[in-house]
Image 1: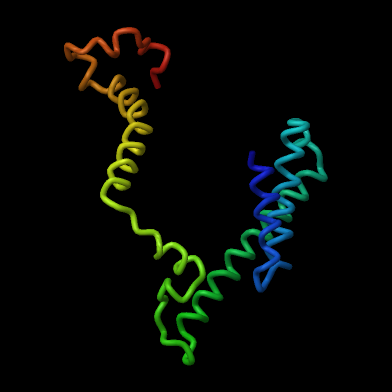
Image 2: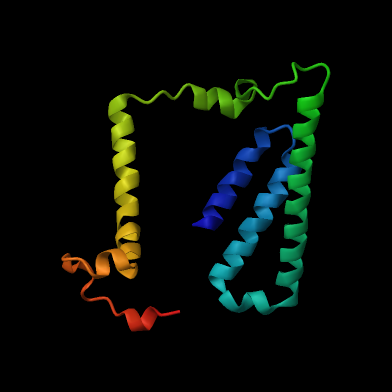
Length: 147
């Protein structure tokens, strides 16, 4: 799944002003993830590790590049000095998405229902529900998960 994401991310970077920076970053990530998927023991090879470290170094370099570009935009005397999100493509596209009250309720319900199993599982290991009348945690084996 991550390989497909990195391939698609690499494909859409050609319309950016700097695709020569982003395409190799996503392309190398796609190659690394597909190689681990096809042959999991490939991480022991020297070539894979060198490729990984080159990719990690390039990723850290890209982070520095983005931070420097952000500082230059913020301190440029020709700009207004603000980091107004509406001046960027992502800010303009995200600002047009106004959710109605009904859509907000659905979004909150989806988030709550997705987190509910994790919350209940956590409560079973705490003292809150282990001594209560709810028999939800009765089949948990606490000795297996002791730390």
